[in-house]
Length: 347
Image 1 (cartoon, helix red, strand yellow):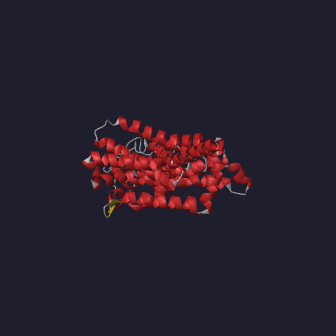
Image 2 (image 1 turned 90 degrees about the vertical axis):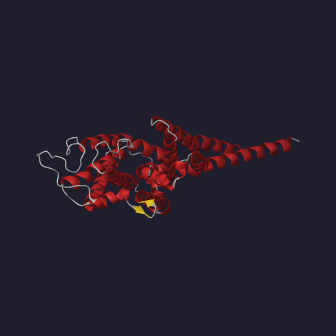
Image 3 (image 1 turned 45 degrees about the horizontal axis):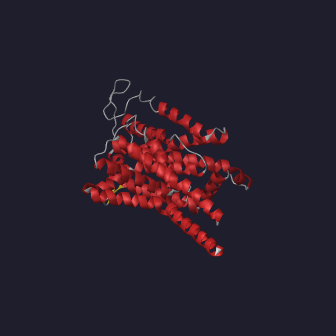
C-alpha cells in the first residue's frame, strides 16, 4: 500500500514537472498568441494588414537595439548607452546630409563608424580599465548625449535651417536615405526586413559559430572560460562593438522615419530595448538571452501597445502594460525555472 502511495506521489510530481516545463517553454508564446487573437477578434482595425505591418515597422528600432543589448547580456553585461547612440546616429546623419550636403550613403557609413567607435570606447572602459559594465556605459550614455548637442548648438537639424555663421544649410535629407524607413519589399516595410535579417544573423552567430558559443561560455563563467584558454577580453569587447553598431542601425531607421535631426530622438529607446531583451529570455524556457526571444519580445510589446492604442487607452497605460509584460516574462524565466529545478531534485 505504501509503495502504491509512493508511486502515486512520484507520478504526481512528474505530472507537475511536465506541466511546469510546458508552461516555462511555451507560456510566453501562448500569451503572445492569445493577445493577438483577442485584439484581432475585438478590433476590426487591428486585423487590417496595414495595421499589422505598421506595428512591425514601429517596433523595428526597439527590436534592433534589443538585439544589440542581447549580445552584451550574453557575455554577462548590459549596455545602457544604446539610446544615446541611436540619438547620436540621428544627429550625425542629419548633419552629414544637411550641413555638409553629402549623399545618404555617406551618412550611413559615418553613422555605422560612429556606433562602432562608441562600442570600442565602452569596450576600452570595461575590458582595459575594468570599470563595471553598468557604470561604464552609463557614463558613456551621458557623454554621448551631451556631445551630440555641441556641433548643433542644442538645436534639431532640418533642411533650410540657419547655421552659426548666418548662412542657410545647403543640404537636405536625400530621397535614397528616406527610403530606409519608407520603402517596402512587396507589402513588407523595409525596416521589418532589416529586423528579420539581423535576427537570423544574431541567432546564427550566437548559436552556430565558435565565437557565439565562446560568448555564452563567458557569460556563464568568465573565470572558467579564461582558464580554458578563451580570449575573454576580446569577446567581451566584441559584444559591445556589435551592440554599438546595432544601435546605430536603429538610429538610421529612426532618422529616416522622422526626416530631421531631432535632438530628443532615442531618449526613450533604452528602457524599451532592455525590456524586450529581458522578455526574450523567457522564450522556450531558455532562461538566457537569445535572438528569437528578443524579436518575439519586441513583437509582444508591439501587439500590446497597438492594441491598447486602438482601444483608446491613454498613453500612460502603455508603460503599465510594458511593466506587466516584463514581470510576467521574468516570472516565466526565473521563478518557474527554480521550481522546476526543485522538482527535479525531489525526483
